[in-house]
Structure formats: structure tokens, C-alpha cells
Image 1 (tube, rainbow, N blue to C red):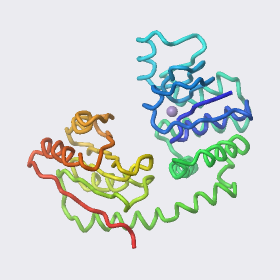
Image 2 (cartoon, rainbow, N blue to C red):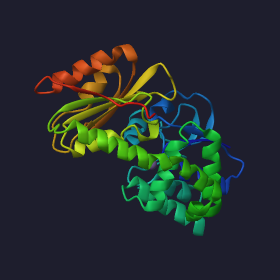
Image 3 (cartoon, helix red, strand yellow):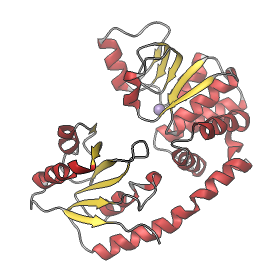
Image 4 (cartoon, protein in one colour):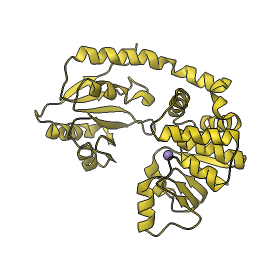
Length: 297
Ligand SMILES: [Mn+2]
């Protein structure tokens, strides 16, 4: 049993846990970026919370975009369960394999909470640890096994607590970022580019964008090191609630994608000037504020 799941959120890891309840020997492959799924040729028995890969037997998913594409390409079979109305892929996994009972029911409830924006204190902690384990496949399998065994009691597991303790610095970082934003003063309606390469861990890369938008910025681009390729920069664009800026107009011409309020692109460092140009073109004043975050001493 070879299974690929979405590796960077609660729904994906909880789906892996449910599969491990049913198939303890299953081999789990984690895919961080759903777009990668289109180019995974290796044979897979099951692909969950991701677009159907070219060579997979069963796809279980709840993304509208995947459903539309598979219908258009006539690639849906009766073995697949791709249902955009499902609140979480984990719910479909439990149904598909008829996994019921205390731990399984609780796991599904947690995945649904996370995927419908109703995070609890526990699912938020789980989400942070999943982001911390971004490139650690062994760690993620371990986490999925703990969830399979303990359900909601994962929170009291010693190893989980150890992982969470590594995030303690997040509080200090939060204070540091708040101070930076305070020092910047009034940035209402402005376009801001924050260069945080080497200064902020990737799991907290977007935190300053949310703070700046809360302070009234129109559009914030954050640039940080790509954990997967050290010579490139990841750019995330976030747009304020009341703004009419479309973030895709910045990322799509440069080969990225996303949504109107949140989009992203990975760039060679030398191409950052092109990104700044796109930001300036959309900024009514043609002005973009550059902020360099200093690495902690
Ligand atoms: Mn999901």
C-alpha cells in the first residue's frame, strides 16, 4: 500500500493517521505543494487531499479544482471519491474505508475543524507542529502514528510536546515582529516588500504580512528562503480585506499562482526586481516600501 497525502496541513496528516489505523504497514509519501501531484509518475495505490496523480489507483479529495479538472479530462473512475462538498478529505477517507470508532471519529472531527476555519487550541498546535516538520518525513510519519494511536490525546504525547517546545521561540519572534511594525509607523494604503531571508523561520514567514495588513497596508509581499532550493526566494503576497489589488496580477506573469488575496511565486534572487516592478505598477503612488528584517543576534 503506497499512499500520497497532502503533507503540510492537519487534514493531510490526519488522513494519513486514518490510513495507518486501517493499514499499519502503509508507506506514506508527503507532498507539500499540491501542484507537484501533476508530475508524480510513480505508481500509487491511493492519493489523498491532493489532485489525482497520473499513475494512481484511487483518488480521495475534496477540492473543487481537482473535481473540475478530472471531470473535464474524463479521468474520474468509480473507484475515486472526489467530493467537493465534503468539509475535509479525512471525512471521505473514513467513509471510504469504513473506519469508525472513538479515535477515528475524533480525528475526523479535528480535520473538519481545521479545514473549515474552526481551529481549536489543539488543532492550532497540531498545525504549527506540522509546519515545523515541513521537510521531515520521518517526523510526519511519527506524528501520524501518534494520532492513529491516541486521537485527540496526541496533545499529551511526550514526543509531540518536545516538538511543540521547539516553537517556543515563536512568542519571542512575535514580539520582535510587532516592534518592527510599530517602528514603521503609518503605512495605510501602502505596498510593502519585506525581505526576511535568513531572519524568520519559514513556518512563520507570513506572520509579519498579517500584522502589516492589520495596520492598514494595501498589499504585502514577503520574501524568504526556499527550504527546498537554497538559491531561490519564495514570495508570498497578501492583500488587505478592503483592497481591490489582485495578487495574481503580480505572481502569474512571473510563473506563480494563487488567489486574489493570497498568492505566491518562487523566484531566482536576480528576478526580484521584476517583482518590485509588478508591485509598483499596481501601487497607485508607484511607491513600494522595502523593509529588511534583521536576523536575530
Ligand atoms: Mn483538505
